[in-house]
Image (cartoon, rainbow, N blue to C red; front, side, top):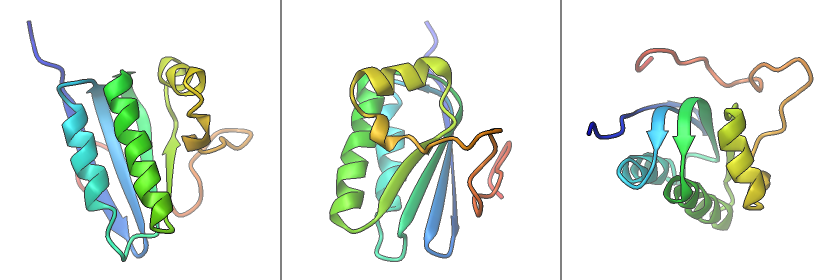
Amino acid sequence: MALPQLNVHRYECGARALITLAGEIDLVTAAQVRRALAECLSPDIRSIDVDLTAVTFCDASGLNAFLLASRFATDGGRTLRLHHPSRSVARVIEITGSGFLLYPVPVGGGRPSGIPVVMGGAP
């Protein structure tokens, strides 16, 4: 049985950080998510955006990583928002009452302004 794969890319621009995740977030890979989010909890970063476009699965351990980071971010006067989850990932987030983490998607889709598009590797 193959272990789940998760690719994590982090990009900082001024007081904003973008984390792009691709693959599965579960008990095995949630530690990677926690590390990437923890690195963004520095005093210089005010806003953390997490792009979930390429996340194919997220279990309770992944959701817990987002909730914990959100609490630390809020306690430090920062924001953490999840963007572009698949239907299945969005459903898990909404069922658990964690929908406050989701960035409201504007009509017509697209990324919020100021968030760079990161594809296939570090910028």
